[in-house]
Length: 224
Image 1: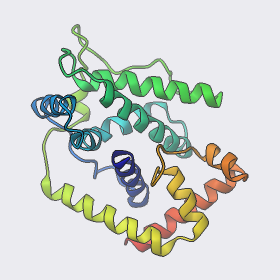
Image 2: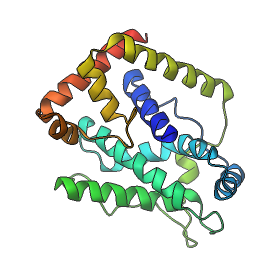
Image 3: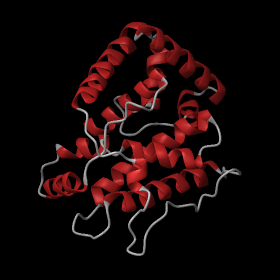
């Protein structure tokens, strides 16, 4: 639950800030392997770190399948679910890097989302994958993800997320908080799409979108 909550808060922070530059830096190959070994040995607190440090990959994959800003939000939410599933099922003893395995999981989750919504992208191929070498390792992984760590940046992001949570409580009305909490899994097991929220609340998807956008605007003003 904690991992899903953090992911939701982080993506909400990105929506409010309008920036993708604050993604936590990814892990080095050595750090990655060590954390997966620890997770397999029952140290479940490292799961949150694995999720945070792979969020850039989710954003990158989401861009390949998004055809509009509103759809991008849903695909990022779905991709986050795929990332968590990948982390929970990855075997650190296999020769491929986690990113190679995670890409397949993310794509499968996104494909299932499109099938469920009966929507198919006309601008990108749903079968498109990242380049891999002869051993099955992604060739572009290091081009996408930087392994340089920045402690100051991580602390700054943590403070901003905490301030954002306070702004949610002070600046949003009951309906706005309800929709933000559903959209970004703040207290829910997984993020919900606008369509799912509309069905649950008995309102139109466009109305959900208007409420969400109004809430995001309020939060932007509150955290400036």
